[in-house]
Amino acid sequence: MGHQDLPRVPPREAAVTGRRRLLVAAACASLAGVARAQSEPSALERVLKRGSLSVAVYQDMPPFYDKGAGIDVELAAALAEGLGVKSSLLALRADESLEDDLRHAVWKGHYLGWGPADVMLHVPVDRPLIELVPQVSIFGPYYQERVMLAWDRERGPVPESLMALKGQPLVVSGISLPGWLMIGAEGGMLRETLKTQFPHGVAAAQALLAGEAVAAAGLASELESVLAGQPRYAIIPIPSPRAPRDGWAVGMAVKKGATDLAQALQKRLNELATGGQLRAMFEPRGIRWHPMQG
Image (tube, rainbow, N blue to C red; front, side, top):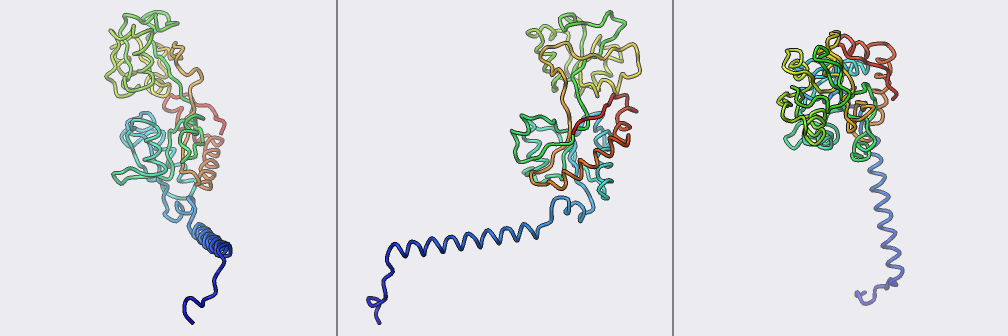
């Protein structure tokens, strides 16, 4: 029989047959993907199998991380202990944006080959950020941070506005939110007497303690860790309308889909909070802490 004698398939029937083949192929591919997903360990299972929890923390952020020690280092160890594993720190320097930090440390990794970690600490629990980076899950608030001003009471009454600081020696870290607020205050009226060369608020508070200024701006955790227990210094919310009034919560982030790991970490964080261990990481350093909602 020659090819001219082969039975012809009507065009409509051929199209239907083609679509059926595509549907069968798609179904098989989908089932194969489900099978692979079911065979792959979850985020928590990988941590348990490895025997360690990789935790990304910020470098040069006292009192949370300073030369391998600090609150976030202790929290990382306590979280890992709750899972029955050891903690492995991934210390990173802040990049140009939080989006970059989360990409490198949580959901993708850095192009130089490091990361991502299982979880990242000190992530703002902030709705706009959550919506901006859908590749991660942000949860577990463990501290409420605020922008504050430390004032030397021996220099006079506590100032009620930044205008009252004009012409007086002031210190702040220029590469920080407090620095941004102080540099731009009232059209830059404080710039002439404002020193900004400090790497963080702890260094600025130390300069105030050494008598180099009448006031230091910084985060509450930074100023309190240096000046707490010294009645000479008042630590008050920075009197600026541009400062976040209620501050912001810091928590943690995991890659989107790492639901079981996030749940296990939240459960452990709750235990640390109710058991007093979390408070004990802050208050011996002079930092006020109160229970968080999360």
